[in-house]
Length: 279
Image (cartoon, rainbow, N blue to C red; front, side, top):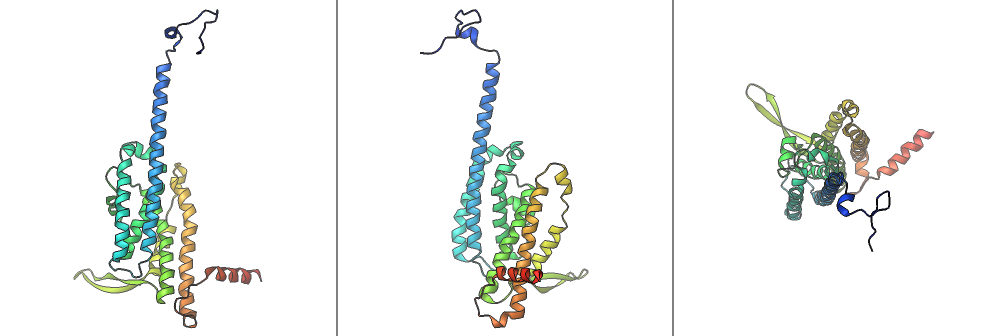
């Protein structure tokens, strides 16, 4: 049996008189919060699914063995439906990220966007040995989804790790540093150009130089997460480039002593360096 509300003198109060003037206002707040949490959960779930599919795309791309070559048919066959599913996921949450909500829920969708940028930029590099521009990257995402400069930049930081894996795997299987040709302008008047061989280590060193030149102190002071995120990824990026350098040095100096298919154990080199420093 439901309870009966009574006034301070003990008399029974009817339902109309017991209702507060503030109840409709708080019911509106409750509905808005329910919508907010439902929207937030939809975005988080979509971001996780996009992240998982992007990782699968990267795993398939790691089976490519040459730079500046057409994508193998088996890799394209695997990644095409994944790309389509990712587009559908972006479109499904586009209404939830409309207008000001694109910034309100930016942290919730950021992880998926960064992983997707890593996959897209990795494929572009394998095909052309160039980075994908911000404007081109935005076009790979369906309308209604904002690609922030922060997510684009952090996705490129993560790209370095995939380039490191690709480089070391290629050196282990082919005995050569992955490389391709690039056009260099030699005469401004005649617009003449020449072809130059450029390897992946050169590209990684150039990326490291550009990343180290970034100044994110203003972002940290303004309360943006970019400064903290860059600080975390900077050390990982440097470590990845150093691993490729050590693998190339080892292949050049002692490569003839090792059989084809040998994969460098960088942990042994780290332990040897630590022992040397201790003496």
